[in-house]
Length: 561
Image (cartoon, rainbow, N blue to C red):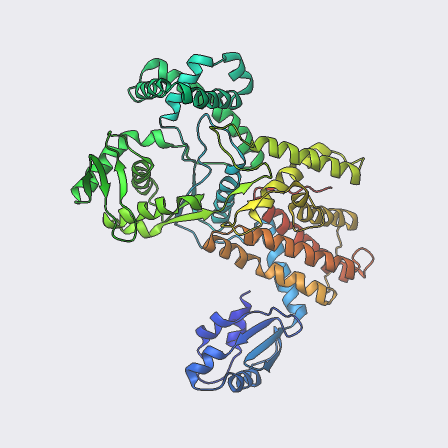
């Protein structure tokens, strides 16, 4: 039920704009004052009254009864209290009717959202620096899908460039097929690092590398076969990690996919009078507030911007998106500003539907990442270490727990994902195993443990086949849980609107903490049957939301811990 709309309908004061009041009403931050609050400052200004006078007029004229228990003026605010019994009944019924699908919406029906995320590089490690980009994009993918959008997940593979000429050169000189078969990308990284060290004393290696990449461009059989092998080895490794992170894609069209599509885009820019020659290069001038966008270098080579332009046109033509998101680190802010500006100057009205979802960087205490130097923190190693630590903790807590290894996988991997999604996406962060695996903190293990506790309660108490007495969940502790359950659909909408899965992560912690307070304050199993029935409804609703919310983030929800 839309309680804000209900409250507006009960306001009888002349001159109050109902839609304006609806936009202003918010859940109260201080539950001791009420459940919802209406600040009257803007309304009073429009009516030429003082906020305190208008608040008093509104409060005295509110039609009480039904769901509204009271309305009281306090300064320039009107604080509303709902009938807790009726409120709890309706919220729980609505949540339980949808189960884990609670919060789903048809707001996106008929609309398409393309999300470009992860974008791993062929023959390079899936390292810690890819984590936030990957799980952030995947979480947005699931959130938009839950809100009814046709969502297209795109892994824009980095599968083009002179680095592959370097890698083939290294392979021909020092490659070991057995080692590559055994260690995959790690073996390729070793010879790639060696190439850069050797090239410092033998610059001719760079010429050889350029020649090999030219052979790839020309479709040379040997060069393409070697490159395809690198690609197959990379995808086998990253697919294994994607499976552990519960990440999927609808398209793996990478940079090479757009090689035969760039000429058409350059012709389009030229036809619109945007393409200029500058010292042999081809650029698009973007005005005084940013540097020109370089599309073709003086040696005729294209760039990321050229391929991204081709990709943008392809995605619009293929998917006719209503929104296209690029989940890429903030270091690429200028690149995307330039890309969108070129489309705007080209007269493409859909340039306004493209968004750079910028995010910060994630690191470990080991420091910065560089494939060239070999200083790489492999994401798979991070996941393995988190799972091992989770297994140790779980074994200490419950030595006889069945399926402890499988549960440790859910807890360890979930801790890594949650650890980077809990903060606002734009922030840089240093990942800490101890912090992420704290079962009592603002972490995935804490939320997962709360979910497992709910499952245990429901199993222990069994079915109670009586009419619930909702007065049994009219306490302050239960009321806080009910308010959070009621707020969950709006949390999902806000997460999509702001591109912030952290809203979901933080909500799950808030709900878990509120449930813990309810659990300690309200006896469930030994309560009178009708009260017990109502309290178990609340437990079931919390369980469903925690499970569904964790899944949105790509995290498993163990039933036992």
